[in-house]
Image (tube, rainbow, N blue to C red):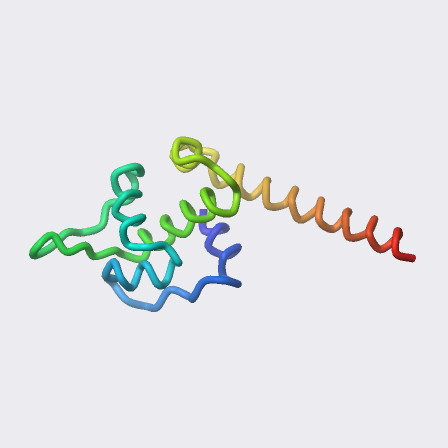
Length: 120
């Protein structure tokens, strides 16, 4: 599942070496608005930030990686909330995403080759 994080490195900042992150920091690092993060907490069981004094949320590094995976599934791969939930819940989710990424890269390479032939 770390593969999705690698896919997003071009448009997302690297995750700093900190133990806890506030919802504002997570919002900036993952390009997801705070109200969306709170909604995702209700929809995805795996997303459980630590709540401290005054119900303040503190996210850990693995939460940020999960949020980036959810973001990728929803915004880049076109999954619905239910589809993303199933994808993250399946044992083969990592293999499926890796395989999908490989197929997409191969298809792109082939299409670029066809485009080059058409231009020549």
